[in-house]
Image (cartoon, rainbow, N blue to C red):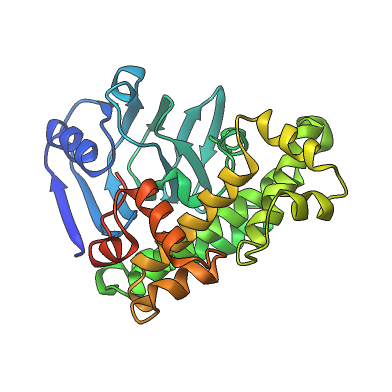
Length: 313
């Protein structure tokens, strides 16, 4: 359901932004009357919110992070006014049309010196399908004018946001996932476009292999030997590349397959697709094995999850 909530004081605004997103601290930039407004909806795992408010500074402090909760990414698309995002030692000046991503599991600050409008997407980190270390290099990096993909993605996201009051499931759910996929593509392009000197060879090789795995999840024969052969390396070398990042090849394949299955099971447009077929389309052809590892990962059988696909928190 599309919801609009308003605050007529800064104290009420602090409570509103913390309940809408994650626990936050905030300070009013200048004394006097304050009003703020948030309109949006939760489309399964993805929250899409439009904020219209006055000058302020927002903090996500270590103390608030220590309270726990799963990691989310937040994407800000500046609609009007200007903002300054700080995280991981970087600063991103956000002008209208600019987008930037930040991580709720690490401290960040947002400064707005005047009234502003911004669109915020918040979603669990696993939806991106990108290595956390890679995304950590792109937090508080402004992407807008001059970035070919950002210039295409930002207007699309803004257009979807303008339709939020009319968007209902199942189309709204599918569009939310499409937005996350577009964002993943945008960030992957940023990662792959970086000069060789900005990262080590191991990280680039790992990313290339993970991209190969993502593109071949439907192949039930996908495994260490096939992956190593496709990259002209020994299987032992492949395992070393993953272990250096505290990962395993089999674990990464399983995680990405299960996440793809989970998304299909939660998608109302896939409600007619048999559960066994969903597993098979992502390379999990043994229905009993699929059900067993899905339950181990998400605490429910595939059929139970389809009946009650609770958003990840």
